[in-house]
Image (cartoon, rainbow, N blue to C red; front, side, top):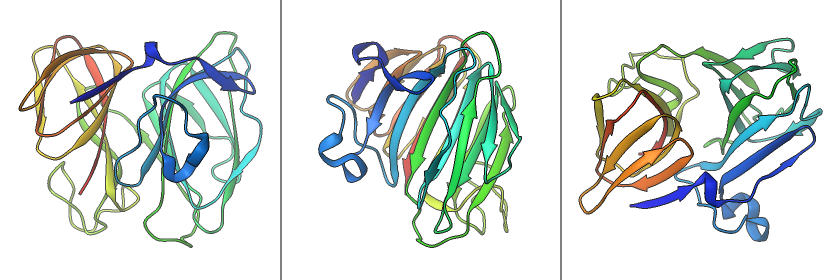
Length: 238
């Protein structure tokens, strides 16, 4: 088990936001990889925990051959760009933007007088040259919600069904896990799990760790027990 705490990393940022970068995969960042950050898993290559300043924005910028996932933790952003211009993203919602071969440009803006909090993840697509696309999800209060990956013909592991088109297909998967105190879940494969709210105990074959908001855990054959109301972003590949 490996653990990386947001608190141990320097606060960076750009334009109208500050952020802690926890995953900067060397396949994308090369020599610009931030010190002490993790590499990803599968095609997952980047994780940042960001806060927008009041009325802060990223400014319009392009992406190509990259899938960009935004998870809104608190507050909201107004989304501008070539995909779903005008869509708002509120706390408890997720947007997934696929650049594909077409590419897209976007600007995320905080419309409020207070700071917000948003997680951003990047995943490299498995197939180049795909059309650009956009998906939006509203997270239920509890349970496991698949927001990225899985087979196009569906997977029953986390509630998929034949012919599913709810997520962009990929062998790299991202699930949002929301548990009440005392509830548990386990994963047999290697995972990267980011605790974005609350606390939980993580155990593998050799170690256990009491994780809190801002902790990133890489482990294999993992049991997770919520010790408070908890939200965890779980990335795996298989």
